[in-house]
Length: 106
Image 1: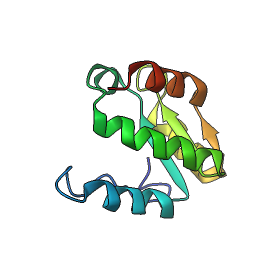
Image 2: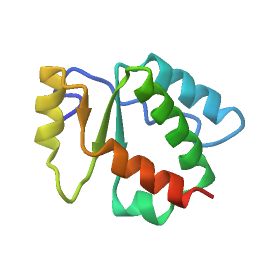
Image 3: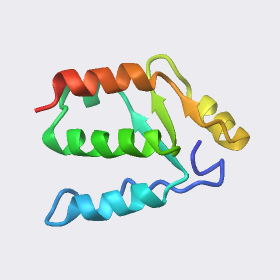
């Protein structure tokens, strides 16, 4: 859905080696849209690294970056595609995701 909408995934980065967060954060700061895959796996393994990413995503959202909170159980990839095509600035419940992050951070 992301590629079909003419966007690029930036998930492939330094896999949490030295300097990973600077690389990931730099890509996040350049992005027009950020998509959080708020899945059961994400919830089950909410690590320090995910908490660091979540804090930056939340900060960027507060500054106006479009953020999609994708719930794989309730949403379909086609919804992401259509929203990206239409330039929709939010998708999913940012408040529910952020509440989860705050309640479960390491």
